[in-house]
Length: 195
Image (cartoon, rainbow, N blue to C red):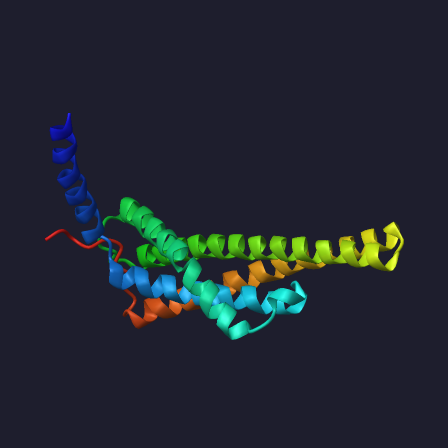
C-alpha cells in the first residue's frame, strides 16, 4: 500500500508541472495584476464614499494590501477565461474576432470577480454600519423607527454603490484589457505549447 502512494506522488507532480507549463504566464500575470489593482481602486473609492468610517483609514495602504490579497483570484479568473478561449479556438489566436472574444472572456471573468469583491466589501460595511447605528440608537434612546430608517438608508446607499461600482468596474476592465492586448500587438496567448 505504501508503494502505491510513493509511486502516485511523482505522477501527480509531473501532471501538475505539465499543466502549469502550458499556462501562458506572460499573458495571465499582467492581466490579473491590472484587473486586481483597477477593481481594487473602485472598491476602496466607493468604500471611502459610503463605507464604514472605520474602514476608510489609510486608503492607499488598504488598496495595495487588498489588491495583493485578491490577485490570485483574478489570476484564476484569467486562466479560466483563457482556457475557455483555448477550448473554443485552439492554442493560437490569429483572427481579430478570436482575439476580441478571448479578451471579452477575460473582461467578463475579471468583472465577475471584481463585482463579487465589491459586493462582499459593501456587505461587510453595512454589517459594521448597522451595528454602530443600533449601538448608537440604544445608547442615545433613539426611537426604533429612526434607527430602522437609518439602517434602510444605509442599505440603500450600499446597494447603489454596488450598482454604480459594477458599471465602473466593467468599463475600466474593458479599457484596461483592451490596452494590454494592444500593448501585446493585438495578440493574446491562451496556451503555451509544450516543449
